Length: 250
Image 1 (cartoon, rainbow, N blue to C red):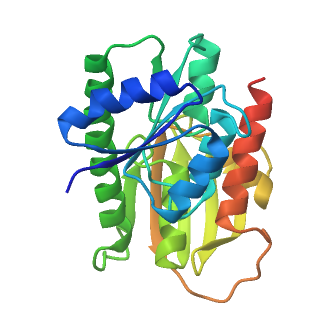
Image 2 (cartoon, rainbow, N blue to C red):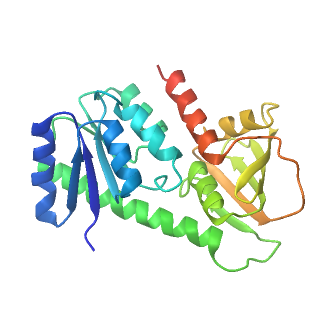
């Protein structure tokens, strides 16, 4: 089945160029002129990839990717930013908000298709690996489910645990040696604390943890009763973390 791509840009000429570049490669392409209409379309019919401009009316690309990443059905949809904003600061902001790639305008049709192919390939591999680690079979208690944050991001892990309604302990260690413990019940974070690093607990510990991009994690099943001290859904945590990242990068 052909991959479904949602193209979002307020410039009709750019939209038409992107469509003309992708159709010959067999992709199904739909378009939107701003983030608000694109989000509504994505929720109704989740695409396999989103290609979006940054500067748009109604809802810009920054807000759009934040909303997309916080939605359980859309958290894994790969995202490519297209923009004339090509400074290192803007590119870093895009990646921090959850983009998979960033292509500066102007670009050629060959460059676009090459990025699309690579992003789809990479995200499929990551999602398959993550689902396998969290959903497949029983692991020995002493080994647990383990992985690298370089392959599976923390936000993706939390969304998968929520989708699968898992209960257990998620322990994460950063490349710098910091450690964080999350207690998950029914897919939601009930308890969180930084055990080696800043003395943070609850939602603040989760927001801090979501800034880690390298390290390792271990998940072990545990459904013992536990009081909810976080009081926030996974989507809510991801939305607030993205908002804070956006604010700090301004």
